[in-house]
Structure formats: structure tokens, C-alpha cells
Length: 392
Ligand SMILES: [Zn+2]
Image (cartoon, rainbow, N blue to C red; front, side, top):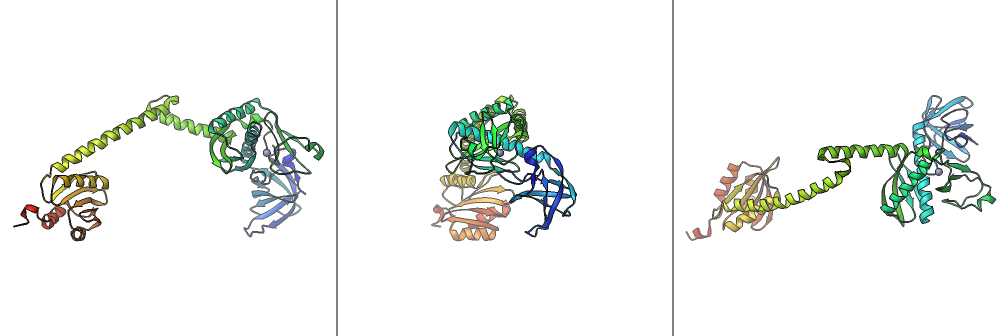
């Protein structure tokens, strides 16, 4: 049975111990499983990842619990019986302690105020998620966040209790499962009382800051994304930097960026509305410039396939013969829309002018890889005669 130094002092970063055994990992990963007589490395459990760090001259890549033993997953072996020095990656561990302690306050208050249970907890490298058994709105979570931070600022101690099973039956505490035997209760006065085997900071002040990032419906309840400690601070800094950039770009006060963006979006919508009207008017004027021609051909810049189609439609209203609207597209040659050209002639056009495309009889869309001059001469040679000349 490994002596668990992390329970005697959660702030212990380095320690010395004897190697009890060292075996190659069963998964043939080339790693080694090292068991010591005592350790400050916390093994994965209760939603908290296992510690990493250094043991003698080997890296501890992960720490797991196996029965009464703590198993250090290491990059190299150590000799059984030897004395070794361990040092855990403290910044990583302390971050987990901050995240975990912040989560206790949130889950405890959600339980006190709403009767919800914590039904899932994940501490990832970036995000921390808490799943609650009931639904909370963003506004309710904003209130909760305020109250959590007040507990943080009150700097109350985070206490451990080891009640007997007889005492335990009289205590109302949060727990995910029925517990018996050795039970460790984490008591945050005013916020939470919960059975937990994880690592926590000594007082709530060390959590520093708690921020709730998002909430979404999840099963019967919600999944909350939250950050505590340095992660919350880094997140606040990132947001502040973003807002400062936006404020600089808009020449707006920091607290007025959203209303400025709102105004710009409204102006943009109004401009788009005007632009659509002007574009239709301009297309109409272009179409009018080929009134009565056959073939009627227009080569204009900057139209997308929709614009080319609209121009050709407007040209049909001004003419009775073949219409062709073309717009040069970077790397794609000429976009086209042609009207009143028989399907076999569209195929012939595509073949002659390295084109592709088609459509319904009398109206086709596609693209051509050819010079304007080549397109014009093909149409001059291949357009059907206007109706008044048919009799000739
Ligand atoms: Zn805990």
C-alpha cells in the first residue's frame, strides 16, 4: 500500500521515497510502471488527471491508482530498492487544484439553490466542463458566478473531514455514489460539502477568480464551461485584448464596442439594400444598350453567376434574338449566361471555346476559356437570324 503524501500535504511538490517495484508496462508502450513506498504524485481520479513530473532521472508521464497502490507511468526504469527523489509538475497540479476547487463551489451552490446534482466533470487541458442534472439559464449562471466569486474573496478555508460511518449517516453531503468505509468530505463553509478524493487549494482565495464561459442543454440538464484561477485570468486578458483591438479599430470606448458594431451592421445592411437596387438598375441600363441587337452580347466585369444570369434575363426583355452575358472571373475565364441558343449550339459553343455548362432549352449557364474576340466571332457566325429575316 503506497503512503499517499498528497493527502497529508496537498501542497507537497517534492519528496523522497524507495522504489518497491518497477515493471514494463503491460500495454507494450515501452513505458515503465513504478511503485514507491510513498508518493506525492496524485493518481487520476474524481475528474482530475494524474500528476506528471520527475522521478530520479525518469519522467513521470501519468499517475494511476491500482488497488492500494499508486502507479507512476514512467519513460525509463528505476531499480527496485533504490532511494529516489520525486518532483511533481507543480504549475500543472496547482492549476488542477484551482479548477477543481472552483468546480466544488459552483456545484455546491447549484445544489443548495436549485437541488441539482453534479453528474459529470471533466478537466481538460483547455476547458473545464461541469454537467448539472437540471437546467439553469445564462442569467441564473451570471448570478451564480457572482456568488462563487464572493466565496472566493471571503477566502474561507477548504476543510477536510473524515467522519465515521455513524457520523456520516447524519451528515447531508453531495456524493455521486453510496459511500462506505473511508470517506473524505471536502467542506467549503457557506458553499459546499461533498465527498471527494481530489486535490484542492487550502483556502478559496487561492482560486483567484471564477468565470462561467458558456452553458448548453445536455441530457436532462446543462453542460457548463467554466474556468478558475490562472485560466480565468488568462481568459479575461484575452478578452480584454480583443476588445481593445476592436475599440481601436472603431475609435469607440471599451464599454461601447458592441453598440458600435451593432450600428455598423445596420449601416452595412442599408448599404447592401441600396447596392442591390443600384446593381439591378445598372444591369437594366447595360441590357438597354444592346436593345434590338442579334446577337446581343455584353462583356462586363465583376459579376457572379447570379449577376450574369440576371443580366441575360434583362437582355431578353430588350431583344428577340440570341443573348449572351459574360463576366470575367479570375482563374475561371468568362462566366456566361446565354439565351435563345439551341442545346446543340450550346454544346458546339462549349466545344469551340473550351467551355463547360448547360441548362434548360433556351437558357444555359457556364464558363468559357477564350478571348472576348473569339467569343464575339463565334456568336456572329452561329447566331440564328432574327425572325424578320427568316423569310429571306
Ligand atoms: Zn474535490
